[in-house]
Image (cartoon, rainbow, N blue to C red; front, side, top):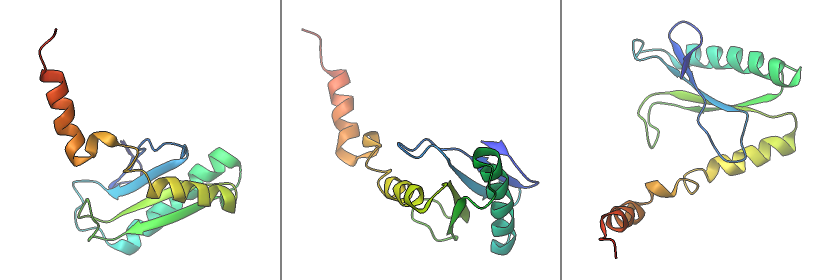
Length: 122
């Protein structure tokens, strides 16, 4: 995590096949930030990142999650850097499958891993 603008945090989660991806969220000390302010900050971050990565400040897509998201209950914006529509589609496909790429989060698999580690050596 890295602080970006005052009161916002940029995280860069690793997602397979999506190298240019980050998430902007309000910092813990700013729980009541407005959605419009969050979107303005996300656009500024996205433009800066796209310019640095591709030389064009228009190579990005924003995906806004308001407060009632499935995993976290605070607003955040996914920033996807992509030089083309095809690259954007590819990134969105892999983002939609990201939970499948994390098998340790599958409900039964964690328990199986614990049992496997706890088995006696022969």
